[in-house]
Length: 233
Image (cartoon, rainbow, N blue to C red; front, side, top):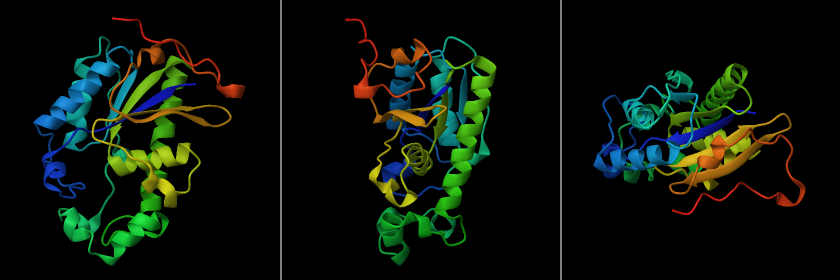
């Protein structure tokens, strides 16, 4: 089956100042974010990806371009509206410190499935559209390139957390247990029986094993032998 590498955008000027950027236009990577994206791109350079799908927001498109610049091939590069940031409504543009005083903040932490952001979207709707988009692209890349296809989706923290929660079979109310840092890499394969989550929230380590072969569809009893270690340098 095809494998998707979920990449969060690098750090932004809004992240650094504690603002909830949401879908605000013009929010770009800061220098730390560019360096984070470059480190992630270097990790992914060993993997010939067939596509890099990005949220339309600037910070994701910038991260995607840095990844593309280190790829030797010419991956398909669509922009996907359905993996854009959550619509936080009137929360957008406010500081996290201020938002933490809101009654809704406690619900966001404890029961995300009950959250509808004022003037924005619900968290279940956010998860439904993002999971559907990831699965749709995954199926299309596999149909075109075969079961060994590996592709990248560049998106946002809450989007990736919701996709990982779905892949792990977790209720949305538990998704705050998942951490997704700036420019982090998570890896999911959607198999015939169930999704397999190979990694979450990684910011270092060899990924060349992803280029070796198609992932097995059945889970190995006992855990299996794993992938080969990278060669010593």
